[in-house]
Amino acid sequence: ARSSALDIAATLPRHFLFARVLSCDLLWSIFNATHSQLRLGEQTVTEPQAAAGTGEEADMTPIIPAPRAVLASVVMNTVLGASAAAADDAQLTVVTTTGMIADTAARIGGDLVDVRGLMGAGIDPHAYRQTRSDIAAFTQADVVLWHGLNLEAQMRPFMEQLAERSVVVAVGEDVPEDSIIADPENDGQPDPHVWMDPELWGHVVDAIECVLIAEDPENASVYEANAEAFRAELSELAA
Image (cartoon, rainbow, N blue to C red; front, side):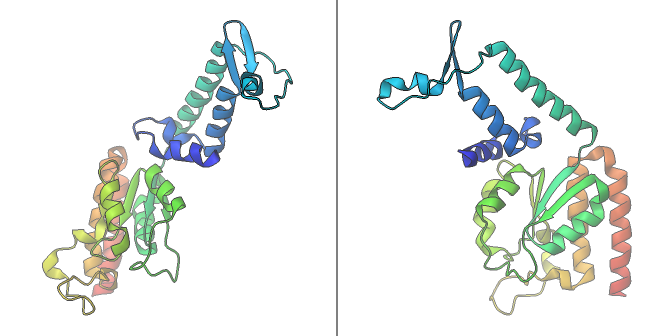
């Protein structure tokens, strides 16, 4: 049942603010509160009492009646209170595949973004497949950044499907095709390891800068300044 609550949170439309704010525990609490009391006219009935006709032994322990209006008020106040708190101190939630992309997004976003990279050290992105926890993280993120260029070849179908409903950007594919050498291990395919070249990685910086500005235009000047400083460092490395 707890996984059902998480699935509900992950699949709610992104324009519902509380889908980004409510924790799984809070959803679970609301789910229990809503389904444990069935109000019929002026009588409040426990779930076991309502199911007594099934032949199963019912727990007749009474519960404190809670009018529907009171329960609805509690739920709404909780949701609105959490939403207001989030609005006061909102960060863009950015989920990435690789650590290189996560590090770059954190450099550009600074304190304005909450970045999580899903592939740890030693993970082969070519063979990696998304886990259930990865799917939950991806679907709840404001922005999803992946490399592309067949680096995460096993994840491409999932990413393309996710892009139909979320902000999903293959940042490596922002590198001009004529700047990428062929992959010696895959005939006809580009070499995805563009982070090895500071000049090519600069295009990835551009892509991440653009998507953060698009999602948070009020802080565009911060993203621009951070990206420019990072590009200067890359230029020094390339010199």
